[in-house]
Image (cartoon, rainbow, N blue to C red; front, top):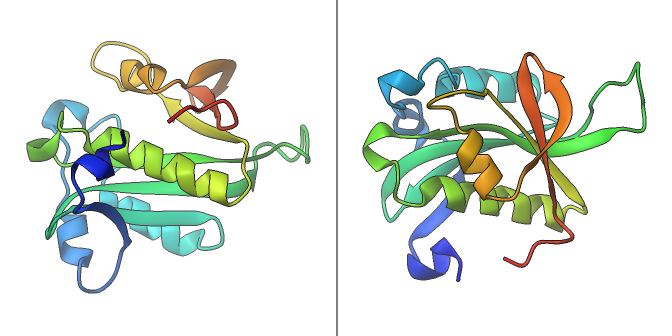
Length: 165
């Protein structure tokens, strides 16, 4: 059963003028700050890359608890293989006060559902390796390392056609 079915008020919402301040106030734990960019940087990237960015607030009831941004249909390395078009998870920030409550899992499932609706068959993500990184989280969700690195980070892929949840 999905997290949203267990908590009906849990949803993704577009970032708007009404929730902008709450979204920008999302802050991960201090020991995680080197692993993920602040939300305000993500929103600036979404503005610059508007055709491919899909930024969303993670909302539970009336409270913004996190931020997620997907990338949609980008050429991964057009110089190497222009047909290598990818979509996936670009950024995930769960506020420090709301971690370990299923919000990250909900956000990743919501993004992969959106990608599936748009016709994607795979979802990509990158992560740092080592202690305290999100690697176990992504592996636990079924992402598999591809053997590639992007900016020193592991590239993972999830086969959306094989999902059971």
